[in-house]
Length: 408
Image 1 (tube, rainbow, N blue to C red):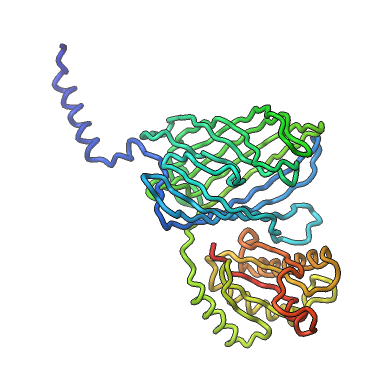
Image 2 (image 1 turned 90 degrees about the vertical axis):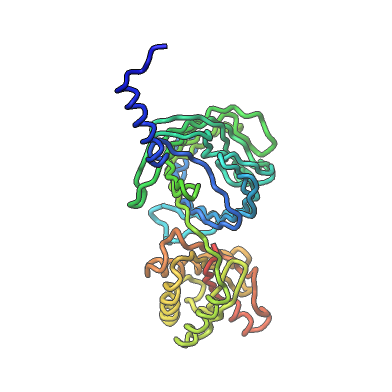
């Protein structure tokens, strides 16, 4: 066997010791999920979407998805998760009168995910939409390295198409490690995720169903190697569905998401602080209570001009005082919910409650109490009375707006 020249051997020895002395991640990084029982975090994603029907623009919208996640347990690298998905939406039409996002739907999901990103989810769950992404190869990666993995989307087509089961769209994703990239002024290891869809699904039971689906998604994911989870991602997407009734629907847009810690809320302490401030400021007809979602500030008998969502001047002053209090809890998102007394039709009550909640939310947004993406707006009509609607006093209390400081 030919001997290695002394100089070359010396170089090999130097490189060997250099490999030992320099941290391993200088040469390669290992991407994987690190699940820890008790971890809680939330994901806020914002989607800007145009919808085309038969190649004509139908409407544009912004969608906010709020996802509260808790790791229930961890076993041999596999985390059992519970997640609550809330979606809210606002129109981007020129004539839109509100800056706020209206609550649309809520889902609960239980799922498992292993350290490489593979998910196990019971078939009845509709969320998350994109599954097994990202998925990792389980080996050290250097910038420029590529890998592929299977994934799929699951869609809720119950309202739009009458399809009662989650609708599955498979794909193969291509990944590339990009090295360090900047997000919000900080540098993180990042990788791209790209997949193309060309799928001819079998017919399913529903009013209408997709006969052919094509599309594409291109993402960049920013990762925290220490925490073992994503920090953020951004995406461009396009999906086209040719339907069994002859129509073509296209969804085209962009999205981004960020992940935040969600420490447990001391609800009793926050409620006590709110009560103290409201008492100090002598704000009338305001009640504070702990609720399932967090801590609610109930503004009872809030006064609007008749059958409108325009607040009377005195109510604006009161809301300004509450806005100052809410600034003290700026790390928490809020929900603004409108309630009415039992008068008029169910449809008119629901519409009015949504409009009045949106008016309050818009005031808070304009005061920079929260950005629009961090406020959920809901209308309940007369569905949740706190008093007897057969009395004038009870109806007065039921005409209210509740601002809830959310746990997640």
